[in-house]
Structure formats: C-alpha cells, structure tokens
Length: 80
Image (cartoon, rainbow, N blue to C red; front, side, top):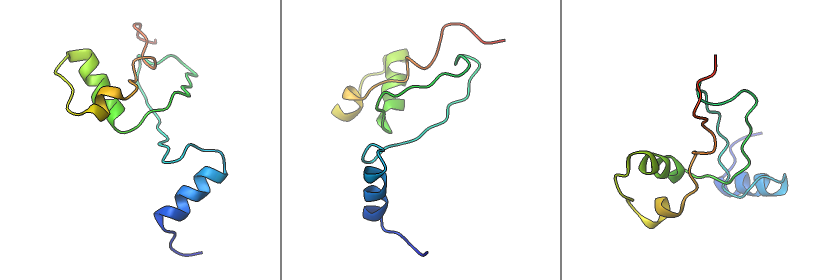
C-alpha cells in the first residue's frame, strides 16, 4: 500500500508483459467496427501523426513523423 514511483510502475508493467512505457487506450467512434482490437504499438504522438496523415499539415518533430498512426483503427463505413 502507498505511493509507487514511476520506476516501480514501469517495472510492474514490464514484468507483467506489457510494453515498457505502454499506453492503453479506448477509442469510441461509429467509424470503428465492433470488437476491433489493435495490437500495434502507439504513443502520444500517434494522434498527431494521424491528424497529419488526414490533413497534411506537416510533421512537428521526428517523433511524430515516425509514430504509427491510428488509421488502421477507423473504417470508411459508419456503423449502424
């Protein structure tokens, strides 16, 4: 019980099989098909990279330039 340092959380995540510094996300949209699960590694800059892919405003840094996008999550069809 008590406060855990970021290093302790990182160690817990690594020993439990999660990716080091992993980010768990839940995305809700009528453009995501039912029961979609994505196991591709993403980070915080994946959102920026996805927006750049859609609207082509240019990359801010090499980090978002090299980040995986969320494009595989969304389908072209809206769910009913």
